Length: 177
Image 1 (cartoon, rainbow, N blue to C red):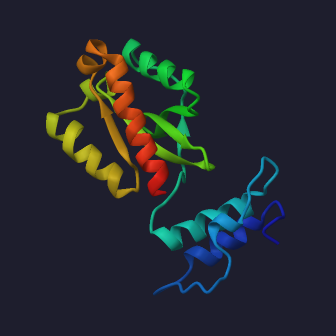
Image 2: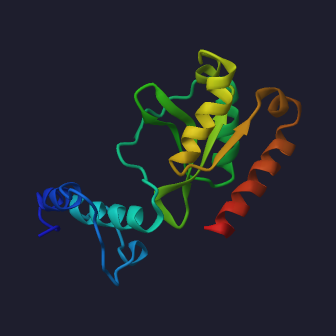
């Protein structure tokens, strides 16, 4: 039934109606479920839920992207990463709480490998240094994001060096996942 158009609703009821706890017994792992462009919403929901049950982290639920570049600095970073073959989404998030750009996991295009924060427009519009530096990163990491920050002054001084540091972090994350 989860393959049918409203199959995801059955899963929603199953996942959300427990009063005390949910116990999952399954030999099926999230990695065992292959998603394609034709996969039903129910199959994707099952994979996401099993992933959450296994890791305790929510992946891409309710995430929206606007695709807008907010500054020449972000555009330079985006173009440099795109030219190196990375798949990226811009302004990932919901409402006013967005990540400047996120690199998609090459092993699973439904997940992100890393969030990249630039000190662009959203950074400068934050209420205080504490909210834009420490608290924002803590919240994102608590949601399971790997956060990498690029400072515009460092980028404009030596973009190749900053790009090399970023690629080292990307390689480290690929190995650890």
